[in-house]
Image (cartoon, rainbow, N blue to C red):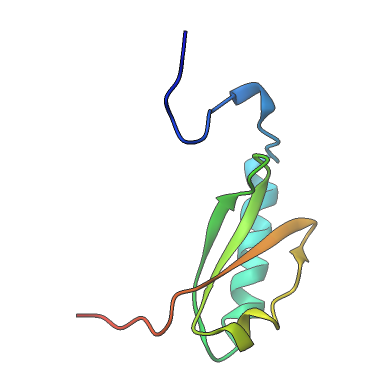
Length: 87
């Protein structure tokens, strides 16, 4: 069977932490990072290798450079979104 997806999905390759651990890391990230001006959003994602990670949306590159590399051993992935405003 052939797959035409841009990134094949292999569930056995996923490196998942128990849900409680990533949720705990998310809570810690929210408490710590929302205090920083320019942090626009925080969530959970996966690394290219399938490991659970904390995703942080930031306003600019300067804020991105101040993010920690990990929280509770989960990698932190930053993404510059610019300013986010409700419409």
